[in-house]
Image (tube, rainbow, N blue to C red; front, top):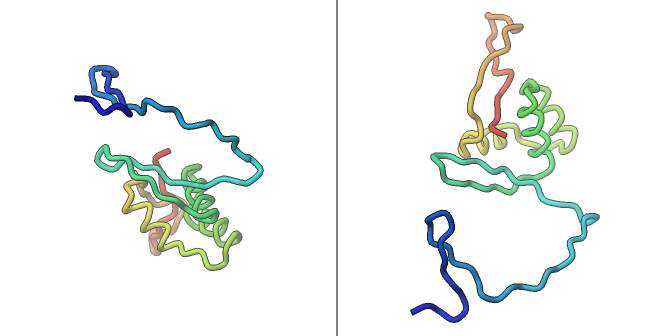
Length: 120
């Protein structure tokens, strides 16, 4: 027997439950700012992580194929306490990083990680 406060129907062959009552629509104050989130799909699961403004700028720079050093400088300008290590750990652990390579312009005597490709 179905609960009176919800109904079940199929959408594209999958069961879908929805509330029978609709919440009132509330106005959104766009001037209040927003939140930045990192959304990744490791192993087809959706992982959502709230990130701060410097981390967002860091990820955005990497997604635009900016070198790691440049992305770090952008984030550190926003927050002197920004941790490149913590941001990279988040990106690796969430599965957001899909490829890492060295810039061909770097000396072979001192290889460095220079650019990351992020899933967008």
